[in-house]
Length: 141
Ligand code: CMP
Image (cartoon, rainbow, N blue to C red):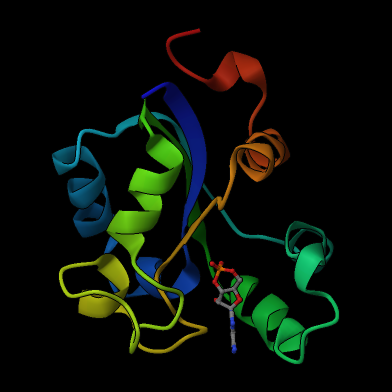
């Protein structure tokens, strides 16, 4: 399986509930490497742009409000099959549907406040990584 990179976000609920370390522990235990990381608070324009694919969805305005409500931690994860592996570690978007032992099943409060975001495919991963990081900020360079 090829080595891939994927974009991950610990969302405002995850940061507020002191879950950064628990989320990172799960990535590292699964063999994913954190190759870039930063804490930041998204502005409204940034959040609207990041989630533009959902702009027609009824939950879009709430999603933007929630994603701008506090700091997030963004990271690039690298490893064999990193995109699918990260999605397996996160579990389904809706914690009620997420498999046992996943971040969302174990830790998420709702379908919106679901602790983490992860890229869903190679193309979105490249776009989402570029949204937050310059190529010179990824290690090893
Ligand atoms: P994420 O994987 O970051 O992608 C889009 C986000 O929108 C999702 O996680 C949830 O936080 C949110 N979301 C998706 N579906 C719904 C929904 N039906 N109701 C509210 N929020 C949703």
